[in-house]
Length: 268
Image (cartoon, rainbow, N blue to C red; front, side, top):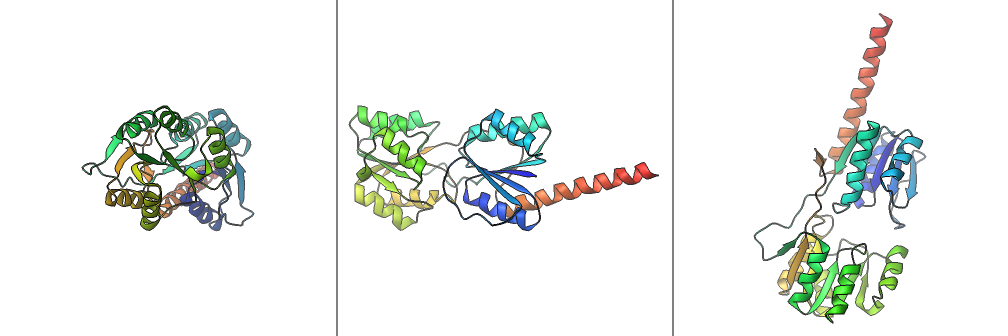
């Protein structure tokens, strides 16, 4: 069985490719977000976050032979844990990672983490639009409250998101609930509607709608802060689902050929 760590749109595409080709697949997603999953007896879905121990247990309990990491580029902890588990259990590891699209040289402020991003954003003054998800939102809420800066949050339409926003005290009128990627026009409308002066984002690649956000903010003269991607040790990463799927097929074809060769030699 293949363990597919997902949650991104690409992970659903990979799941469909795998089950259509006859691979038993366990798709693990951290959130309760509904997605258009393929219907197949070969596909099993589990939900909820996995730490390193939990991931190891899932692999052992399900006889996992390969782990495909198609998590978000900013899920650095998950990727790190996956690599450690695969090394420990001698499981093949493949990574799909979106190519970054925000290049150095543009009038953009790059920062190393969310704490720095939040501090820089409030120092610039004016309304902030945070499009960084909800996991790291607390530091922005705290910083904006401390310096009396207006914060607008864009979040997914999931129960987890709604609970987190409520717990953090983000009022409904300061939230944009929706599932991206958002178009250039969508971003332009949001920026104008709330009078946004600073955009805080992550470089989630083309499929994450990063370029549309940045272009809209540039057109409206907003300051743009990009939180850099975490560094995870990945020897090789694929940027397209089909390329990764072909690598999966090649791996299992090679494994099957090697087993047949060993059997033939044993019979001689």
